[in-house]
Image 1 (cartoon, rainbow, N blue to C red):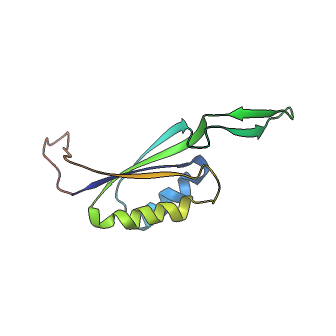
Image 2: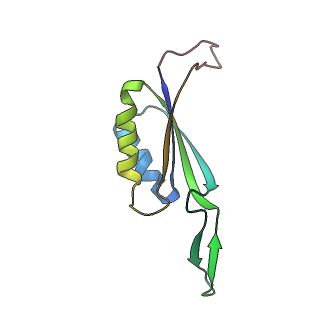
Length: 112
């Protein structure tokens, strides 16, 4: 059964993640700009004026990939390897089942 892999990562890691996924043969992906927060809820940053500001919506990038079940571990490991900094806010990866995938142009169900 095909899987959908959603990965939300730091915006500055986008190119590294994309290049790593291409290097392992991922044929297609969708990338979205996003904002949000995780368990940390908000972070404190030093502003230009020298004042500490609390920011709760941080810029992120979301990768969406559909892959064969046999390739999921390789893709997940590639994302972790290229996105991990070891700090709070590195992101999250979610894997879910795909029941149906239909090509709009041909109206045919895709076999993945």
